[in-house]
Image (cartoon, rainbow, N blue to C red; front, side, top):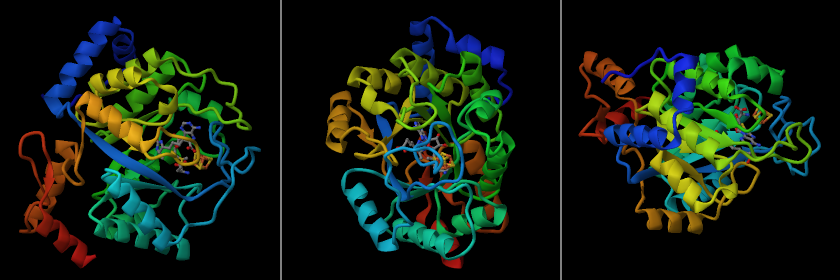
Length: 363
Ligand code: SAM
Ligand code: DTB
Ligand code: SF4
C-alpha cells in the first residue's frame, strides 16, 4: 500500500487515543509488514562541540544563556572523533551521530574539519549522521559529497508549541534545513520531544508536520524530555511510560517505513517499558553511556536487554528506509547509464558498494 501523506491532526489524535491494546496491536502489525521486528539499528551519539550555544531552546543544557553545570568544549579533533567511532563500532554500533551546539553551520576551517570527520568515519564502514543546526543547500551538498548518511534536525513539537519553547528561530527555519538536506542523497532524521508541557494535540501536530513531508523522514527520534537543572523546563514532570508507548505506536502507524528511534529519556524507563516501545514499532536507539551531555543506559546493559528480547543490532548500510526516496535516487543514476546505488531484496535495502564508491571517488 502506498504511504499516506495527508494525515490530519484529528486522524492522528484518534489513533493516539485508541484503547491501548488495539493501538499496540495495530502498530505491531504495521511494524511487521514493513520491518524485521527482531532488528534494531544502534547509533552512538558524540558531542563534537559542547555548550555555548546562542539559541534559547528551553529544554537544552547547551544553551549559553542558561546556568547549568555543563562544561563546554571546543570542536574535537578528527583523531579524537576517529578513536570514539572505533570504540562505538567495537560496542556494536553501526552509526555515529555527531552533534554540535551551533545555531547554524558556518563555512570555514571548523566545517572543513567536520567534513574530514565524516570522511574518516565513513572509511571505518560505519554510517555517519550529523546534527549541526541550520544548513544551507550548499553545505548539505558538501556533507553529502563527504559521504554523510543522515542529518538530524528535529521539529521538536507542533508549530504552535514550538514558539513556547524556542524564540530564536522559527518552525519554517527547521523545515527549510530539512528541505535542503532532502535535495541531496543524505537521509533525513527528524522527530521531537514529549514531556515539555505540550498537549496531545501538539504531539499530533508534530506528527502531522513530519508525516506530510514527502518522502517522510527515514528516521524519527522520539525523545522524552530529560529535565536539566538550570533550564526553563527543569521542573517538568517525567513523561509516563504509557504516553511514550502511545507516541511510538502512533508514529509507527503514520510513518510505516520510518525508523522510529527510542531516544532521550531511556534511563528513566524500565526494560519492560522499553520492550513495549520495541513491540509498538520502535526499531532504533541511541546507545552509549552518554547522549550528548546527559546520561544514557550503560552499553552492556543495553546489549543484555537486546539478548533477552532476541533483538539483533542492524549492520551498517543494510537498510536505508523509505523505498520511495530510494527508487527516486536510483532512477537518477540509471538515467545517466550508471548502476543503481541501492538494491531492495525483500525488506532489506542494501547498498551496491561499487556504485557508491564510484560516486565517492568522483567527490
Ligand atoms: N544544535 C543542533 C540543533 O538544535 O539542531 C543539534 C544538537 S540538539 C542538542 C539536537 C536535539 O536534541 C534537539 O533538537 C532536541 O530534540 C534534543 N534535545 C536537546 N536537549 C534535550 C533534552 N534535555 N531532552 C530531550 N531531548 C533533548
Ligand atoms: C535526538 O533527537 N536526540 C539526540 C540526537 N537527536 C542528537 C539528542 C538528545 C540529547 C539529550 C540531551 C543531552 O544529552 O544533551
Ligand atoms: Fe543550541 Fe541545538 Fe541546544 Fe538549541 S538544541 S540550544 S540549537 S544545541
